[in-house]
Structures are given as structure tokens and as C-alpha cells.
Picture: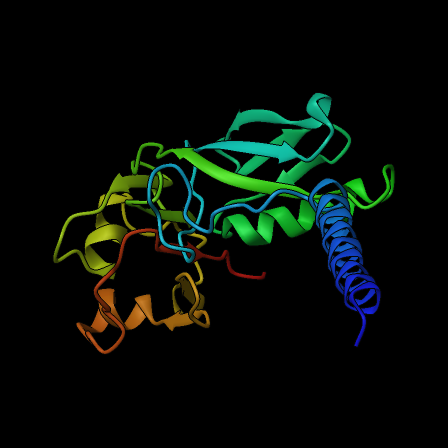
Length: 213
């Protein structure tokens, strides 16, 4: 084989490798500018992915390439936040991922392909989540700090007992992620039947309806 043929083959191979390198570099550059940045799965305060947002928490809402839509907001006592364009968003007891999906869906009505991240930047007070409540036909509606060992009867008595219009057999205990629990307050108060005198947990709400006349 002649020297000229070897030189031609060497240069052809070198040129091919050079073109391949340039192609890969160009594709890499395109992908780095055309996709949203990678976001860490753990937020600034180190919560696990399943952390659920509560009243008083602070959230950082980041909308990629839309600084005017990116805000830091507190979670109000009603469990909601206000976000630009997205409006009122219910975030209470939801994960950051769920809130991100909700805001993304809202913003998609106004901007193309929004990319939203939600980060919990500060934990709010647990005072709202650690309370227990009694509402409806009682002496005085009650919102009290949870104490270990509290029962349905304890709460009803702290609420001043039942009003004269209470339907004591139709009271209900509401607990997060659990089906409503029926309570027989008439049996508890009048007959000493403790069958439904359940222990309460933080966040529980007891409702006592009025009788239908």
C-alpha cells in the first residue's frame, strides 16, 4: 500500500471522528438550553418527599424562566396560598409535588409548558395541626390544644356539654385519612356506655348536629 493511500485513510478517519465529536457537542448544548434545570428531590429544610404542608409553612414557588411568577408565600390559616396567575391554591395537607402539579395545571391556561417547583423553606407553627375541636350543638364551640389521653367525653365536657337542641346519637368524629366515625354521645352521657368514647388524636374534629323538629 502506498504512502499516499495510508495518509488518505488516516485523514478520513480523523475527519470522521472530528465530525462525530462536533455532532455530540452540538446535541449536548441543545439539550442543556432546551430543558428545565434538574431540581433536587429534597427541599431546603430536609423533609422527605412525603412531607405534607401545614398552616404557617413558607413555600418557594419557582416557575422556570418566569421570575415574575416566582414567589415566596406563607400558608394561611385556611390552608391556602395566593400565587400569580394561579390564584387561590389549596395546599394544606398536600405534598410539594402535588402542589406543583396543581399550579402547573393552572398556569398552563396562560403560558406554554410551565415548569413549576415547590419547596418548603420554613416550617410553621404546629399549633393548628396539634389542636382538637368540637363544633355544632354544644355549650360553646371548642378549639383546644391536644393533650395525651384525651377522649371524646373529655372534649365534649370542655365544650360545655350538649345544647338542648343536640342530636346526641348522630355526632361524628372526623380524622385525617379515616372514614368519619359515628359517635353515640347520648349513650356516653346518659347511660355511661363508653363504646364510642374513643381516644382523640391531634387534628380531630367532633361535630354535633341539631335535631330536626
